[in-house]
Image (tube, rainbow, N blue to C red):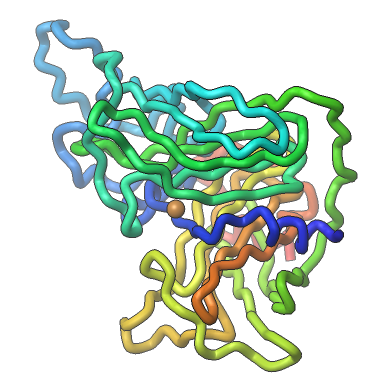
Length: 321
Ligand SMILES: [Cu+2]
């Protein structure tokens, strides 16, 4: 069973989204958008009761440059797994997100039709699941999850608390047993899943919004009747190999906007912070079923992005072509 087919088998029929970052500019990018949310922004971590009322300028701090998903706790919000998973056993997996007050968060903004998007990948990027847990009144989330193989997994919670900014928190999930790492996936511009072939055009350029076009075909015929799923024809998750930084991807257009076709092409803009390999996972829906196509893409021929300098050369990045 090849990796793509295996991935297909894992997908629970759910899809993706980049709630957090959408419409808020870039959490990883070089440009700090002018703060449009005056009150809270990223100031949640400020302890209460320090008297000076704290209308802090929302300035670019270190956390703004840190890709999502690398931290289990950020801006006062913490992801807390509550369930241990055994290999191959369907599990009611539970977790909370606690807020700056230490209590489980119950107020979330809906992004892409959901209050919280939950992604679980194996640390070797060999498996990917994107699911949508249900939240109980006390703020405990639960979702049916099966992790077939022993090993280390990374779970991401992508959400925006009410009144706050979008966040992606990441936590390790460890499944006991005899772990056999998969060999690294080779860079590939073509993926197959359930008889569909998806091809990838475009290059990831560190530090830039890079256009990626994914084309879906079935039995050699372009698919032109993709179905909207969570408000888009496709959802793309990008994870950096090595640390599983969770990167942010904007879809280009949406169903019903009068210009976005229902395939075969789905276009995204992805920003990656460095060179290296990235796992790309595309969820798309056709004929009532959501499938995931998995790619490994290489950014910038391994060139790390220099730290941002205000006086950077205007042609920054062109050399990577
Ligand atoms: Cu989702």
